[in-house]
Every structure is written in C-alpha cells, then in structure tokens.
Length: 111
Length: 117
Image 1: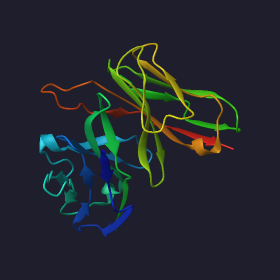
Image 2: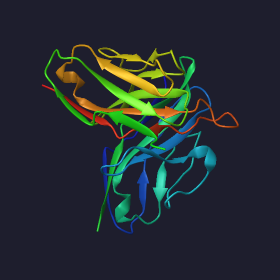
Image 3: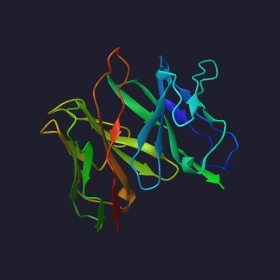
C-alpha cells in the first residue's frame, strides 16, 4: 500500500539552528516525492519536488530510495519558516495519478 | 487569473442538513480533487475527477457525493451532514501530466471550514 509517514507532529527549533523534517514512504513503484507547505492563513502550496533537485527558500530534500526517505532540511532556520509541512507521494493508484499525504509536521521557529 | 477558488469559506450545519461546496479553477486543469484536513490525519482524498463528466472515489468517500459537469467546476455535496464531517475541506486542481511525464503540481484553494453540530 502507498503510505507516507511523518513521525513528528510538532517540531520546534531556535532561529539559526538546523532543521530536519522527516518523511518516510512506502510505494511499490517508482515514486515522485513532494513537500507542500501551509503558512498561517495561506493556502497549501508546493515547496519542492524531488525530481527538480532544487533548493527553495533554503530548503533541500534528497530522495533516498534505500531508506525510502525524503527528509526536508534547512541549515539555518528562519522565523518565517514556521508553518505546517506535508510530505506527499505521487503514484499511480487505481489507474490515476494521485497524491498521498503524510500527517503533517507543524514547525515552529523560536526567536 | 484567480487560480482555485472555493465557496463558501465557512459554514455551520446542523446534523442531517445538506450542503454543496463549490470549487472553481480557471487554469484549464483536467484533474480536480477534494480533500479533508483533520488534525493528526493530514490531507485525505475524498473524491477526484480526471476530466469533465468523470468522478472517482478517493480514500474517504463515504457520506459525500461529487459532480463535474463543467471542466472548471467540481462540486462536493453532503446529503446528510454528520458531526464526523466537521473538517476543513480543500479543493485542488492540476494538469494530468507535466512535460516529460512527471506529475504536475496540485494547486490548492483556500479551504472551507465546515462545522456540523
């Protein structure tokens, strides 16, 4: 079964500290992985996707197929990074391309 | 270009009442989705549509119905609301595929906060 697990519901770090949001997945095929972010009072939006191999707002995420992980990292957290983060997997499920979301991690950056 | 819009933004229902949530997109996307967001549960797919006139069940379809009569609109209906349907509902849309065959980004609406008493 397709599944995305974010083990931390809440994560709190101080400004300037490194941050890592964990994401593990299970999928029988070749997955596409994403991180979506929801800032306070804003709609959910794409942060980054693994195939782009890009850094957005200082965040990076590497797909590790051996560990089935797609952890989100940033070396120096900023207060504006406080948000809800969702890891998502895209795969063909029941004949259609769908996203399966993790439970989400609420990141709080303390000043 | 408004993107994805949802109507209404907030609603309070009594158990047993019915209502329809409207989602509209102006990006000419083929795919549209309805999710519910609950604390500790993430986003769960209720129903989705891969094109005008087509709908399919997602992960948690019970108690909901949908229709996609026009490409730009995707309606979510609750025939007899229950307290368990208290949630924030998000609509999203996307192209079916990006160039090169990868999954396109899903664009989300602002959400509808529904409370069922």
